[in-house]
Length: 76
Image (cartoon, rainbow, N blue to C red; front, side, top):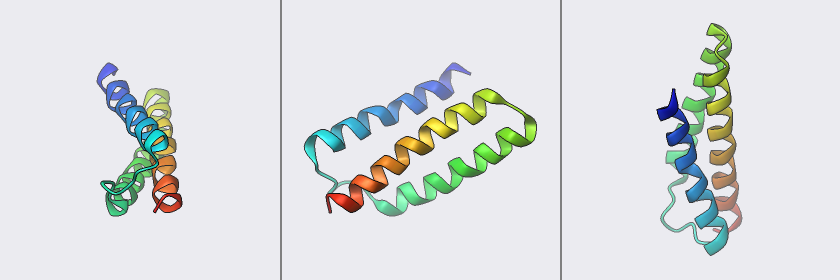
């Protein structure tokens, strides 16, 4: 279970660096779009099996991914 939170936490540094530098040249919108779709499927699965850790971790990661997509569009 702890590994999932480590992977979720990895996105925090990407969001912070992107926000701080206002640089999105090395971020691929298609990658984050596909990632977000996968995260949404994990959230649905979490609800299906009634697993709060899966739901929470993926909602947090999806939120961070949405922030990156927004910054990619905004700072383009």
